[in-house]
Length: 200
Image (tube, rainbow, N blue to C red):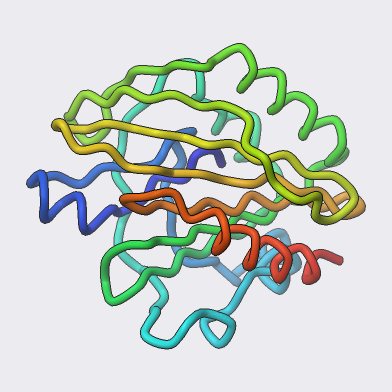
């Protein structure tokens, strides 16, 4: 989880590299092979809910680390599923993760504390230096509880916005992350509301 390792094809074209999001964990389409992934996978957004012209992104994620935002070890053991969509093979890109930890409330509070202690970060993603910042973002409440963050990251002199919302409904946790060249809060709100309704 957190932040998802985006394929970032547009970044590949503009900078000649494959980068990722933050929070270091490879992004892929959901695997339905085991019971542990089948339940969270059933709660993911589907291509039929995306705007016309969008597609499922099956490309491989990058690799690397972003220091204090590296949280993947906290989430890998939990039942989860992920999916990513993009517009015409580029940006914007929308990535969703659904997790079923023992206590979604506890896990969410842990994430909030880690992010609060890491307003700026540096790292190396796919062999390229990345710098960025993260801060709380105004966002309507969705689900039983939610928090949203505005994230900027710069790679090879190119700045991207990788904003995300973390929402809890019952004991299910959803992260929805939107990568684009400019902030697009309205789109994140729209699909945050759709996504959280599928958490059961």
